[in-house]
Length: 171
Image (cartoon, rainbow, N blue to C red; front, top):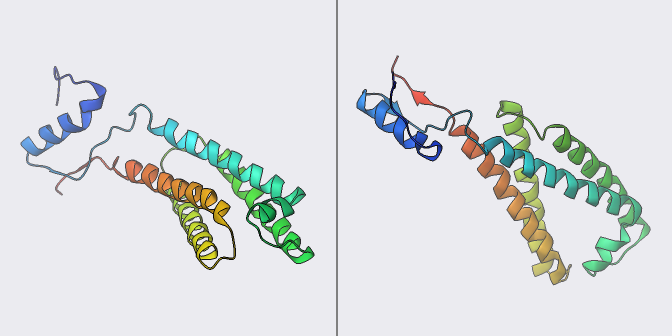
């Protein structure tokens, strides 16, 4: 019991580590479940990502030639057809993120985050390949940067959530 021991919120992790180690317990990582800001960070990330997906869905649905022309890619009926079909996926992702924006750490949220990170990483890699093979101009690079930032952000949110695994007590 830690009666009478006080520490600022930003030092809970260190306090609990020292206490657990002093009692002979193994410590992997300690982050209090009610740590301020953790849920807000995911909420903000999911909300911003939902807005990005919504914007992409509307753009690809209503004007697929706009992103293609920005990247100096020839537009055709076929590219518009594929772009409009991809718009439906962006809409679905945006709705999923919007509805899950207040989710607590869970296996489902982790699966969504890892899946989104994987998708963004693949998009970034494809963007770089298209740039270096000169199939897209340098204006693809801001999209690649956003995709990398989103991928890393979703992974970092889940890494911090996994840190909430408290103490490993011996059996």
